[in-house]
Amino acid sequence: MEIEVRQAGGPDIEIVSSILLEAAAWLESLGMPMWREDELLPERIESDVTAGLFFVAWCGRERVGTIKFELSDQKFWPDIPEDESVFIHRLAVRRGYAGGGVSSALLSWAIERGVALGRHYARLDCEASRQLLRAVYERFGFRHHSDRQVGPYFVSRYELRLADWQPPSIAV
Image (cartoon, rainbow, N blue to C red; front, top):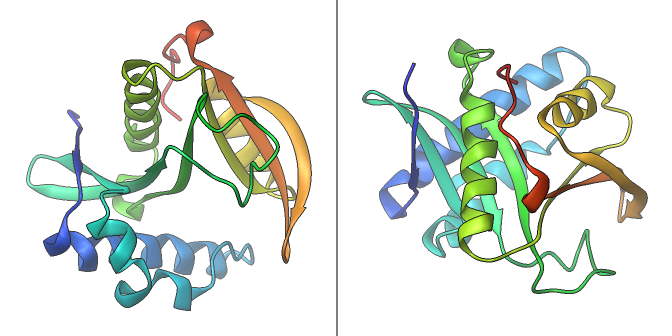
């Protein structure tokens, strides 16, 4: 399955929202809520999409996943130099494509973009209690950096040194 990552634009707001809402509903059904539904609605993500922060994974003519890619994250990473990292948020894959390498393609794309931008680290966070998700990031090569309380969220923060990155041999 060949996956292409493209920057989302105004016409993609509904698609990005629907991918995020589908992932959130699935996690909720498993008793593992991740995002509040109201923060994923089109009107709530519109400014981030139009600002060029969201990207969409395409498989053929289907939009199958999304990722938010940022160059700054003062909310979750206020304690690091601002110009050394790229930050990954809101990685989500349509259920019909889960396990097919979409997450790996999106993470690889973000890391390659970080390298191209001359950054030294890729950083992300997730709810600290999400052991399976943490294991996915660790298999991909991310290392636990620290845990931190951010508002109502207790998160585990992960980083990947871009100079050390090797593509994983298995899809995550």
